[in-house]
Length: 93
Image (cartoon, rainbow, N blue to C red; front, side, top):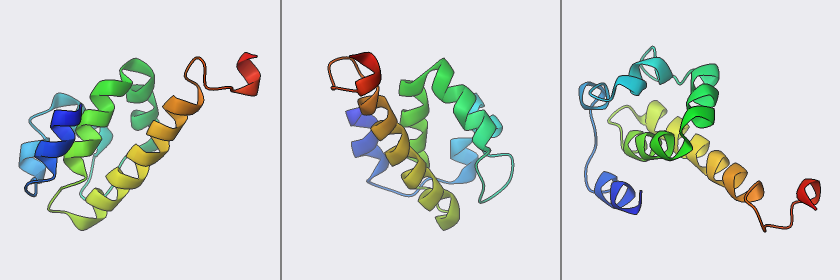
């Protein structure tokens, strides 16, 4: 995942390039939007793959999509760390 973030920071990514990932079409049905239900389902299925895709989308040529992807990725990373074993989450103690 670190490599994906580093590579994503080097250039902008077109929607056509993002659509090469079959998951992207479900996550972003229209320009400038992300479907919250599809994102949630992808997060439940495979959070690592979703975060890699969001890292790439964070450099989309579409500035609205890029901003959404950055905000969402940050929230999801926080969610992962909050619920990780050994983080002191009150619900796991």
